[in-house]
Amino acid sequence: MLLANKKVAEFVAMKPKGETVKPFIYRVHDEPSAEKLTTFSEFVAKLGYTMRTDTRKNTINSLNTILENSMGKGEENLINNLAVRTMSKAVYSDVNIGHYGLAFDYYTHFTSPIRRYPDLVVHRLLFEYLQNKPKPTACDVEKIAKNSTECERIAVEAERASVKYKQVEYLADKIGQKFNGLISGVSKWGIYVEVEGNKCEGMVTMKDMLDDFYYLDEDDYCVIGQRTNKRYKLGDKVKIMVKKADLFKKQLDFIFVEDDL
Image (cartoon, rainbow, N blue to C red; front, side):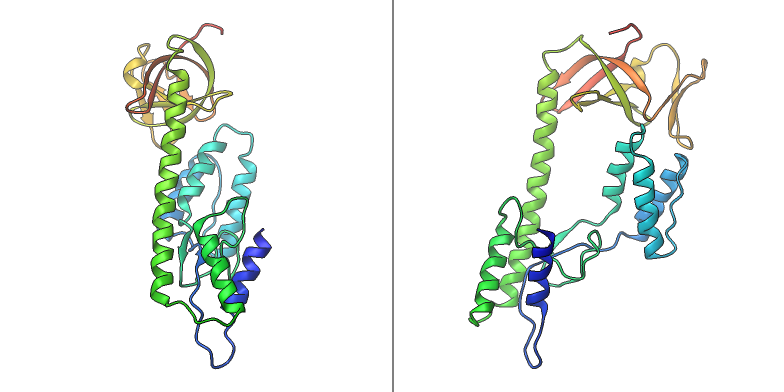
């Protein structure tokens, strides 16, 4: 699939001497911004990982090493999610800048397990160029690329919202039930817990942690009890009880429990 997408983009991008550039839809992925890389580097450093960003090669190698070394650890999901957010968004464009994530100079969406609208447009463009038919206008292709990118963004947001909704719906009739979970994130508002087995994520708010006054230690990325010095950090195994499932807000509220399941 990747090879087909790459070769079609390369073929169309070839410009025989004297010919103008053929309007085309590329799947492009820009390099991550220096600001986002710095933020990611500072974050993983708190977890004991080293991220080099002095050269493009070192950035790629460091990122791959961090992802490999975090596999199976408590912070794996958090690092994976943050790494994705650090990257630029892949988009459709009539201007080719290459694909950073795949390390390809030319890439498009020509074939895949599903058929997207850009795939069909690329099929039509390729057919027209092979038949030496009149080229479509660059303006038309640009509009299609921009519209496809926007539609993709809307679809991704809808998918995320629907998954979260179904997770909340799944636990809506399980109020009071207890589950094993892993701490997936911490904030000044509370602790995020991902339920083992079904990946449903909810929050234990600070106000529901009544055994102590807890605060966020931003340097060590953990929540600490002021009196007991009890620590909650990424990847810790915990037991929770479902307190509330709000379908309208798509939110799950948990509380910590100590007794065995």
